[in-house]
Length: 301
Image (cartoon, rainbow, N blue to C red; front, side, top):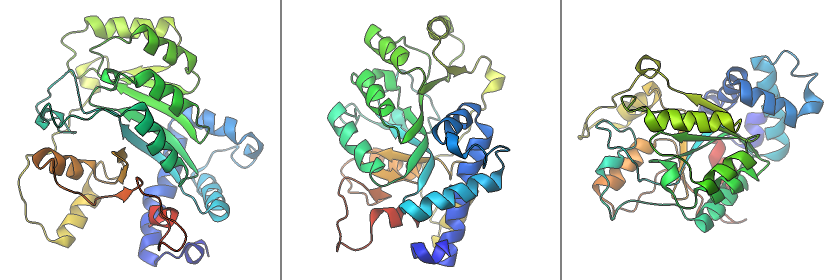
């Protein structure tokens, strides 16, 4: 019934169940911090979620979707800068390919506009990841964290840093102020230089700021995504490649676009910075009544 109510085809509904409903349940079941925040927000539903089973979470997501016609986003990356302190050879985000003129920094005003546009079209975002580049290089970082944490539709703000720089006093105060809403993931890709890495961990621990770390090289498996060249796949080949991709559920929000394949977008931007891309859902322009398909429906599809 819900499929017909949303106007989805059978194939669209199958994709939505895999990429959204089931992923919501999986993340909430396996992420201890998110699970606790989920139960805190919907405390009156603890009786329904007392065993926190997969099917019960899916059922609750369906009920929310039926009444709001807005989807919940299980996890999302928000890129606030392409600048980084490292130049990793196999960078998944291709940041070393960007020239100085191509680099991008999200301003506080643009962040507010884009986040508000996103939240107007979804029910909740369970895991909102602020990433880069190295996000601490953005001069508006503290204000961006404050604004993201002020949104009740976001359950958890996760910040990924490579552990090569220490937060300024202003940034540290922001992290302390919002420590009940954030989690910091320190993914030190170098590990051979642990001076600042250990200083950062001590600083976070001293101020009781929730964080996860990569302490040993064996704890982090670097994935090589392949060289950039034209493979000339047909449409069915592209679909199969996408469904086989280990990152197919890693959606991102970059320059006002909701993207399901950020690597394809970054490759195009890095190789041709002046190209006008139509990938993803453009939330820089809102859809009005009478303007055709509504944005929430496009999220579902």
